[in-house]
Length: 275
View 1 (spheres, rainbow, N blue to C red):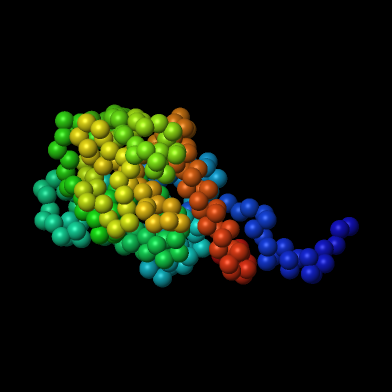
View 2 (view 1 turned 60 degrees about the horizontal axis):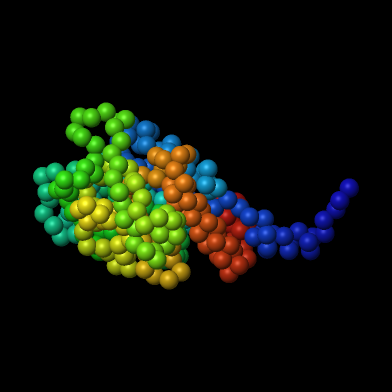
């Protein structure tokens, strides 16, 4: 029978980073409409899991204290899409008639998660509405309704099975370019809004080449990985290599964040293990 000494066990507890844990990724419920969220969530959760992470679902009805407690022990965040639109008052514009109603509960959780990630420099991946939410939180503005010859969203009344695709031109030398491997990729498209003026410490790294609509932004702050895309990589995770790389990079960055934090705070792992 193998007996481990107390000294050895203490060492293991303080140095558990030698046993890699799966990083925990906070993800809010996409929308206050249960039907939409039930339909949309599985692709996000499956993509996080398949990439090597553990999704931590943040219910929109939690109190700020409860949501903050869950977020505290997560290593990264993913802000998903939503049928809502960000309230234009948040970026000092009047509402366009085609702008959808906001979802205050989702906005509240997004802002809480973004603040936590900003304070701690946790990795951030945002998708579609999540990217618009990120941009407005960073003091940027939005195009409230895209007017273009390029189709960016499903035809009104069309079935959900209709898939819209178009090219996205990637900025050379960007972190996104290191994931795509190509200067131009084909992306699915399901959005009627987009980034107008990029927010603080965000830079444009992809555009639709035919109409210059912004398709992706990334963080410009060294040491803090932030990527926001307008398309939906979670929908093509199983069949598209770029989609997989995006999620895998989120997990890799979150794992690195976790290890760095555990080194700075030896008790961090013991506290987290009990959550």
